[in-house]
Image 1 (cartoon, rainbow, N blue to C red):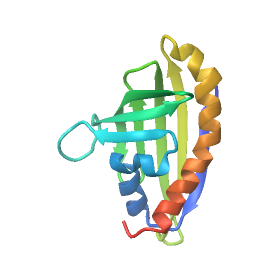
Image 2 (cartoon, rainbow, N blue to C red):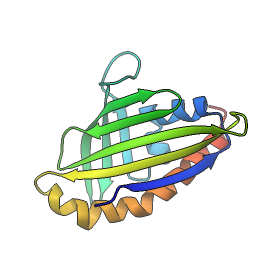
Image 3 (tube, rainbow, N blue to C red):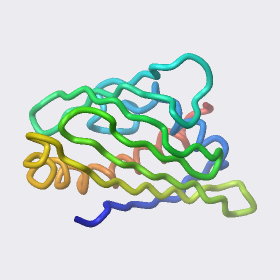
Image 4 (tube, one colour):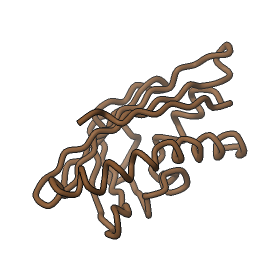
Length: 149
């Protein structure tokens, strides 16, 4: 199946966008399916850091652990699911424009199903994410453009 990809322009500097996106505490603010999220490690975020995210997947609420696989502030990040029936692989990029005052944000998501996830991914997860990702990026834009964080 094809990777799900969406992009949006945000009127904030790449450093601000990156910092916001990589703070797990902000996930429920801009990701519609995220119920909660927390860093599982002490110290700064980096490759190997883990985040526990609880999401609505269809009618279920599912906890999952994500591991940071790429960490290149303020340019790109990557995360992959390490447990649960549905494991996402996420890649994000923040490209500066307008002399670094604005950011072009692109997020790619793909999924791997394990056990019942092999059924959930094509029937529930992909359709949900295809609808949700553009809305998530709009929420990200709205949060960043209308807050002083």
